[in-house]
Length: 427
Ligand SMILES: NC(=O)c1ccc[n+]([C@@H]2O[C@H](COP(=O)([O-])OP(=O)(O)OC[C@H]3O[C@@H](n4cnc5c(N)ncnc54)[C@H](O)[C@@H]3O)[C@@H](O)[C@H]2O)c1
Ligand SMILES: O=P(O)(O)OC[C@@H](O)[C@@H](O)[C@H](O)[C@H](O)CO
Image 1 (cartoon, rainbow, N blue to C red):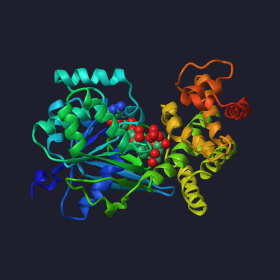
Image 2 (cartoon, helix red, strand yellow):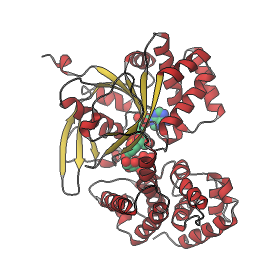
Image 3 (cartoon, rainbow, N blue to C red):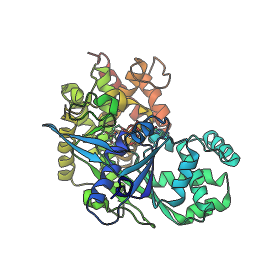
Image 4 (cartoon, rainbow, N blue to C red):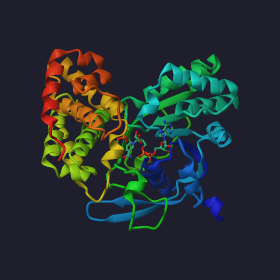
């Protein structure tokens, strides 16, 4: 068999070929392909810069996945990505979107929260036939190419850390399409299935994992042994048998998303801001600091009170996440995790506070400490963020995240206590 014939045919397009896609969706697809039967190849597109596509293409898109446990490494070669392209390559993108059965995306959380100005700019590009720069613009452009080519239904799977990510994606795609072409909007509404998914596998930015002793592959990705993928939605044109790698197809992904976002991701956001304030650089270092550990437990206590799971299951998850965070062989940089903290707090911490208040509880000192850690780190110039006043800084920060909460005197009082406790936090 020739080298070309060995590769799986392209049936999936991915937007945002960062470290996580290569450790997660590409690995699930690889495991499914290895089992035999129908094989699925991925045509991968970068989001912002072409670098990752150039590097992957230069080595036939094969790369080593280094699975780094607390005790040692194992290395697997991944071949599920069969093409890699600069995301700005309109021809390749439209060609892929005309034919694939599945599109997966890792486009980061801010890509889902857009204003009218961003949508209008994309609409202008789409009207002129240019490929927009934004992820939403590119998705609408690709769907238009498929519609014009008479293509059939397909599934788009969101793999970003957001509650209801498929529905959010659907909403944004339809809002943009409506500015461009009513026929296209109706076609998308009818033919495109937006799948929500909870994705999990701690995968630091490739640059933070260097040097990787286990391999000399310049495109290697380091990840942890644990992984999860829970999906809800239809796949009208089929999909790989991702269950072979442990994926779960469920009717409602919401409880799984909440559990992961409110424990693991909210915990990461807290540890990132508080850990940086206390002079740490990685998650494992922050976990070794009793002050950070205590804050994490308080945050989890607050979330546990409103999570839709039995206490025993929540405790089990907390133990698992604790062990994963303590894996010092994974150098997960707090600076990377602290990026876009405002967006992340809005979707991981604010909903917990709101849920607690709805249930007649207080706002949660542990959750508010995550807000206070962020505002303190931002005003100290240690984390990028908005300009905040010197007086009542935490309340001003909360007003940006959730104005109605900042207007509540009982919330403000608890937040001020959390902010005062952080004074002198830097080591
Ligand atoms: N790294 C993890 O541990 C992890 C785990 C679960 C989920 N995720 C999700 O995956 C996303 C990507 O993580 P990563 O570690 O691969 O990051 P990364 O920085 O390695 O790669 C991100 C990729 O997305 C592209 N991108 C970023 N913003 C974009 C935008 N607005 N539009 C289009 N493309 C964009 C980048 O160019 C890059 O190709 C995260 O934001 C998160 O939502 C990551
Ligand atoms: O990816 P982000 O930027 O949403 O959040 C940073 C980390 O919390 C995140 O990447 C986790 O490592 C991941 O969600 C684990 O599955």
